[in-house]
Image (cartoon, rainbow, N blue to C red; front, top):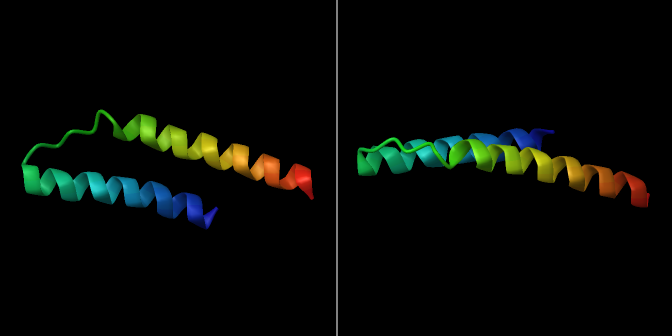
Length: 52
């Protein structure tokens, strides 16, 4: 769960850093990225628990 939080936090921080240098806050890709991270984490956790 900690890795999931760090992945989401890293995506948000990266978006903010890029927007700082470009002076354009573009977050259109951030929501699908976070949803993809959460779905991928859920699938990976489910597959890992089913193999053990």
